[in-house]
Image (tube, rainbow over all chains, first blue to last red):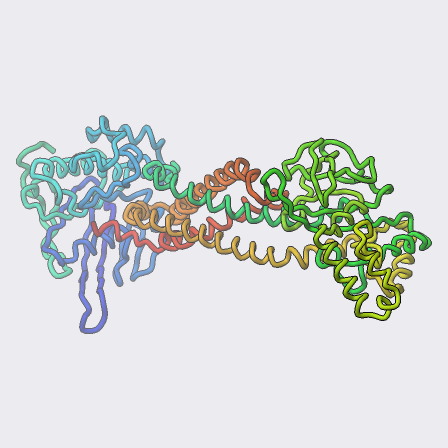
Length: 236
Length: 403
């Protein structure tokens, strides 16, 4: 299995002197294509900082990030157009769906396709909304969608350009148990059926059986990396 | 996908309201420029229609429009005798105010040198020039009078035989044309009471002088109602208009400059006097108003665009995180500013076409205004979008991850 992204020895510190806070302390991990991984840890453990570093949003101070075997970030310097990399190869899902408020559900997916430049936006958007079973809401604005529908549209948007890597930051925090489970299963489906590497930051202990790998973080370090628990409610 | 249009689709009332406000402000700004252009045109139309090569006025004055000029009537004949002069015409100019059918009318009365000048060079839109040396009048249509109407001035009835269009002074007063003789009658008309008082003053002066004491019959003559106090001099002219053989213009100017009682101006110099003296202050005032209004419009556009951008901060951060190029996001702000400008200008144009003809002052839309106004609007809204642009460019995509 090839790695979508590999991080080696990431360090990140916020502030200086006595007020300095170490957010990442020698973090290394690899996310393989076709796997869905969970990142667990208490608040302030560095999960969001790691997501930002892996998503080429806020580079680490030290360490290296390779994307599909190519060095993209090393010791704070970048060796590729980060915005282009994000729009063509990465997908993001957030705690709140973060859909663009002035675009309809379909347009939210369409704009991502347009930015990536890989697909015919409208057709691809409809296909993804059908895949995620929200096609009947394609003309609705975000405020008219339920939390679950919004998160499905957000996942469709993240999938728009067939990304190699999907980063999800507590995507089920605002959802009830049933909808949370559904969203987590969607991530597994996307990883396994579409070959993307998916990393989900979560506090939800009830859906750990969905993940292939589970990472645990504390004080800016990855303390445990273990295989996921046996699946309980759905087939892979 | 045009994000600017998609965003506006969700904010139609606010956007339309802002465009309407901008349009009204632009209507006023453009009107200011049009009024100024109208003032310049009005100021110079009087000189242009007279078609004179040289204006001869009282020595050391800037007459007859910028200040009063009293020229001895003999100047006309003296100038006509100068070699190279093709034509010399008397010219008078005075402002009068009369009530006519309950309406106060301010009229700039211009005297034409009958019989050479019958108003044939005037911008007549109806009627004809003067055919009689007395009792006929050409007026501007802005006075609201019709052909055949009569106007009573200095006890005489004058029939309107011709109408001009846009013959106004720089002060916006309508111009009327009559013969110099008629204009002088109006200018030096004396009420009966003033005549009686003048007779009394003459009797009193005679009583105090040797002349009166030695010739008592003079006092009896002065009190005879059939007798009018003698004019000491012919009524002065305001100017003499000269047409010159083009090849001898310099020579004529040299000759006339040597005369001790006159000052000469070319047509261009006379126009400069009008624009520099009469219109200059208005130009500064209008320029100031225009600057303030343009600044006001820019601040309104700036704040609306900035607020619209601030409201979209999180949306724009998400789009940045998704890899949207910064220029594309900046384009959203710029396009919205331009759309505001286009809508505002179109509204101002339509409103102007409807409203300007009803303005009390003439609003002239020159070609320069037609070109500069939309260009200036474009520049203004572009500059006004800078604050919003700055905000967009500084949005951190990491903001999208912070919920």
